[in-house]
Length: 211
Image 1 (cartoon, one colour):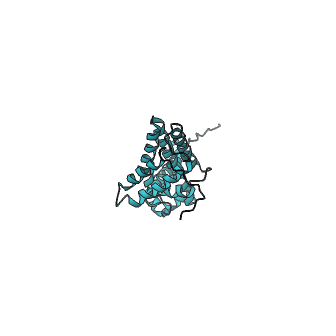
Image 2 (image 1 turned 90 degrees about the horizontal axis):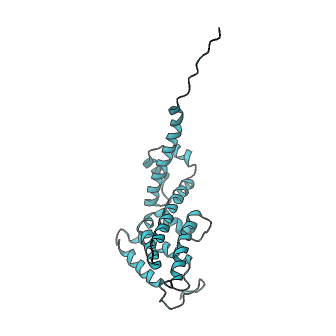
Image 3 (image 1 turned 90 degrees about the vertical axis):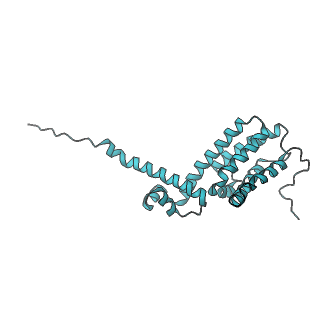
């Protein structure tokens, strides 16, 4: 007589558990890395990221074999959020000048306090091939074009000017935020005033020396 033995199906939950745990661990690592990178910049020790995320170093390295992989994952995520938020704010602002002012206010209130973003922006602001920089550049190009079309932006001001101004003011926020937290807004007001179309003096070129 042929005896048929029933083969137990593997428990679906058991099969899924490692995958669920892996996803949960990766998300915890990225969240912790975003916090630590914002506070301390890209020079942070990965052991601090592992500690905050509640995983071991082996787990961290399985997901991100190199520290640079983790840093770039966080920066891409945060740059994308920043650029999209800025784009939405620019779309919502009917007045082209208000759109520029709101963009800087939002950027400096939020992500200028993200040390790794400011560091990375300072190093890569002129690189058009980086995804995050390209997103940010497109937002600023749109703001610049709207203000120029309305006759509100000083002639000769470029997208690179506005990007580099963001880098400079971002550092100003980090330098003054603890001791003089309102100082950066004063600098922003001065900077925006210098961008207005009624400033008639021609802008110097890139090759002009300062004596």
